[in-house]
Length: 268
Ligand code: ARG
Image (cartoon, rainbow, N blue to C red; front, side, top):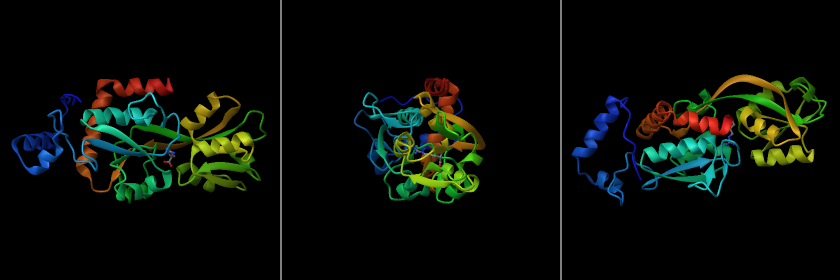
């Protein structure tokens, strides 16, 4: 596996780190040496791997994909795959429920190094985990079956609205959907089944995911809510070495134009 040459913007701290690593022969460095002779740039929970928790399905951000190297693809996965490649690590995706991802529990239990799960950066979560630089802008949205009487959030009074447990969409619905019965589901797969079967009248969640359901046919987005959300990758609190390494790869991905290529692949 190839570690890309770092862009000119290599930070002084990273340079110092790289120089230290070259000049030392501690067992710590040996542990990180890989079979092909290259050296992993950061310590991870499983040698040679970047283990990533993700709540799947959440297309177009994360979905199973037998044709992808990790068995998963999507905007988040493609970005984190690029980052793993840049760090000389093999990407290993561990499907994980969203509640323990966003609470920090999965990271604290060392189930993964990074969580890549369309996670909105917010203060409450920052108390329990660290976020990388933002990599995607999002907002909330309301999806209904075509021909529904529901045209706005006010029309949810007396109706059932599906949300995903422990998400910002659940919080938005709780605060704003007056008189609605809010039904929480463990994942988007269950939510989409519920709106298809008529078990709920609407879905309130991140725009990108509802937008894909709309293109799948039979459903329409009647409102969007500009919540100015931004997604970040989550890392165990205090793991600044990995946080900085991921941020550096992310910056390099933007500089190289590869971020735009991946963005265009999923969002046109
Ligand atoms: N952005 C929203 C949040 O942070 C929803 C994320 C859900 N992600 C997922 N992979 N299911 O709460």
